Every structure is written in structure tokens, then in C-alpha cells.
Amino acid sequence: MGVVYLAGPIMGNDYSGATDWRREAASKLESWGIRAVSPMRGKENLGKERAIKDSYDGSEIATPLTVQKGIVTRDRFDTTSCDLMIANLLDAKKVSIGTMIEYGWADAFRKPVITVMEKEGNVHDHGMVRGLTGFRVETLEEGLLVAKILLVD
Image 1 (cartoon, helix red, strand yellow):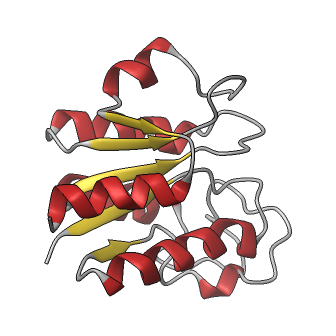
Image 2 (tube, one colour; image 1 turned 60 degrees about the vertical axis):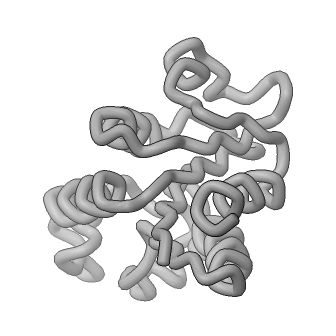
């Protein structure tokens, strides 16, 4: 079974904005026998957050998965141990620093990156992102199909 890491902006989104597309993508991938890994798993305690923070160190809702060290450790592990990464950057309002770091980790471990981004106008449309992108598509559905072709077909 192949494993896909589902990268994309989290900070500033509400819980559903950070999880809905990942849940839908995971369901589709699972139907093809591919396991999806989300950086939001185990963070149900953030369900009432209107704007997710970069970390919750010192907060009453902090858990080992929502503090700086836990976020970095798990996301690095997931990014470097998956088979490929899908980065959903659609409709991003500001640059996702965490996702950009995940691009670096994926590249360092030679994990293919599928970038889902508008043809023009996305805040992430930068030479470094374009250079680390193995496959660029404009819809999540297209990105999932590329993952299927790489891991199953």
C-alpha cells in the first residue's frame, strides 16, 4: 500500500478548512488502496478553533501533537517516510511556511511532490516551489489521479 502525505496550509484556517479536503482526499485514495497521512490527525482538540495557530505551546488545549516540537517531529517523519506528497495550495491567502518546509523535506528524501495550485495568482507561485514540484495540477482530483497512477497503476 502506498502512502501519501497531504500537505497544505493549516495556520489561520478553522478546523474544517484544514481537515475537510484532507478527509475527502483520504477517502478517495483509500478506495484505490492508498493510505493518506494528514498532519491534522490526532488534533481533534482544535475542532473549535476559528483560526488555527502555528503551535499551542503553553495553551490549555496543548497536546504533544500541537506543540512546536511535536508538530515538527511528526510532520518531518511523515513527509520523509511517505511515498509522495500532495500539496494542496488552492485558494491560499498567505504563504504557508510549514508547507514550504515540507517541500524541502520531501525533496531532500526524493519524494515526488504533486502541487495543486491555480494556473496564476497563487501566493506560493515561486521559482523554488515550481522547481521542487514534480507534477503541477489545477484541481485536487487531478492530483489524486496522478498519485494513483504513480502508486497503483
